[in-house]
Length: 318
Image: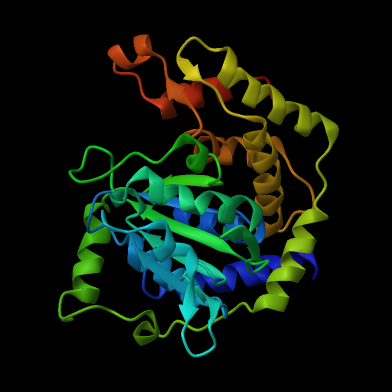
């Protein structure tokens, strides 16, 4: 697949999702970048901001095996990955696969279940495999998680473990729409009753497994020169050296930022990464991998503000 073809494919997916989703263009672009760079996405926002519907519309553009888990406080790890059950007819244990065995998994309200159950996702997200009773089972090579969560300030939610957060490529913040967008939403959906199916909005699949593999190979071919690689490393290391952050980003963050920057360049029609690609993606890659220092928290500082300042202070190659 050529870069121009990948850009056209990305434009087509955007157009399909826009049939049902009003606004949120930047969020959709980040989801495209995650798709083409084999990353996972965490969507955070208050209830009623179409997080789940956005994930459903995005998945409708992909001709892939789709799975969904509605996370609840009583959900157990076996409900996610499956278990070996004894078959009395054959007198043998047989594997009953959980919903995680799919290509694209919608993990809805992922922070409404305790950390023990959330931890069942760790191996799947990192290695695309799960271990059941000591036996490892491979997941799809296309496996991708699109998770939604309500803000920590909401009732009945648990914070995600840091190890799990680190496995998400992006944490995207879904805000309330502006007045004009909200009016369009009410006009488009105000007369509908019940849940809306993306297919009812005319969304058609634009991607299959082969196309997605070809796109991933194209992204890998995007040039990342040493100066931009050095910039990524200096930016990530800066999060560990500022007194405003208790914990900085890990080396995994630098790897993921480089991969995502390649995908951003590709969907914009370039076969090389520029510093602006890194700058545009840094907040979404780093915000969930850093922790405010006690002093910064007392002062009411925000992680996004600190990361933005670090991006501005870190000299970019010309």
